[in-house]
Length: 99
Image (cartoon, rainbow, N blue to C red; front, side, top):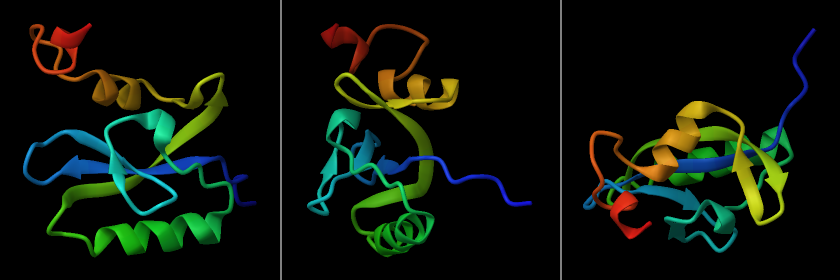
């Protein structure tokens, strides 16, 4: 029996900066998960993944990440995605330096 589809977002890393980015409903890449398009239909999610995958001049490592709806938009359901969103853990730089 197939598992029930859970909401997802398309995520990748920006090619030039390496920053974690999320695909928006307007086909833009945003560093803010709160701006990501939440995909609730499996076929549409696969289509958006394919569309994003061909944009190799902008991003690398594109995939679908599980999310849940939160107060301020989508929130990651897995530690890996929370870790990616907050940046490197070895010392404060980049996103962590801004906190």
